[in-house]
Length: 160
Length: 169
Image (cartoon, rainbow over all chains, first blue to last red; front, top):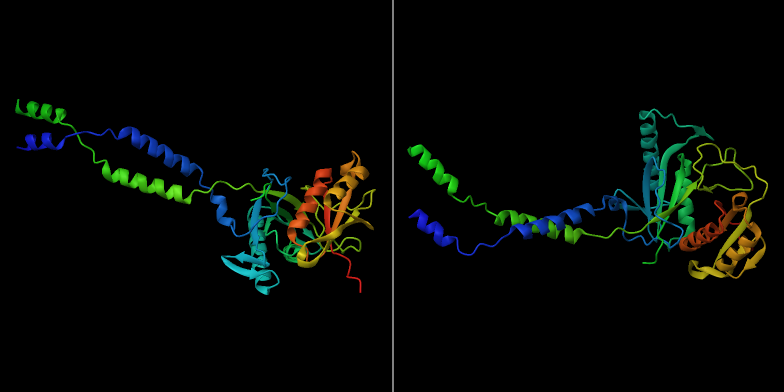
């Protein structure tokens, strides 16, 4: 009985193996292209255009990205805070303290220049092209006040 | 004997693997990756090294970057050529004012002319020159990056940012 039932159910057999091969290749392709870097990038920030800003590898030990949008707010832990706000200064202070701790943990005693420890973190500034220069300048000034001195100004080589 | 027969029958029987649940999962994964796919955006950067000058400085105000230099020591201020001052004047709405690029005391037509002028001054010794950009606070950031880009085209890598002079009454 069971023999007969089995034979009737096995009608037309579709060979699924080639399809599965292709689909798994597609998955692998998309998996490879997942860019985890973009978690730090705010898509609403439209970067300024500069053809010399090539995506070259920079010698960066530690990196901290500040996304500055067109009305002068920086996203700190998902919350936009005005650069001129005291809360932003506190956030930079926290980051500076963390950077100093991690430098010490790595056995690198930060040098002190003008009473400020020189931190190894590079501040990556992703500022909107329409933001006022004063806001960018203020952001840099606050970071300098807490000992950051390596900065990078992000731009895109092509117009979007 | 019976045992052997049993073994032979199970050996001949086709083992059917249930493909449907696996296919379901694979297609779900595929759809997830297709929907979250975003081509990598091209982003570059201008590296800037901005140590605050110890003791302060009259000539160069608070922000003192030196591009491209990855030197951890103090910034080198001693040089033979005094830095060229380039002022960017903002017009209404934060745009660059007409004739808003001023090199020293000479107003220029725009950034293209700045590039030509700088190229003529610098010649082949771009490394010896330094430029201080003094931009109005209300200027849009895009124009500042354009200016940095223009100056970098000439080959000058020492670019500082300075505070603009106080507005004339």
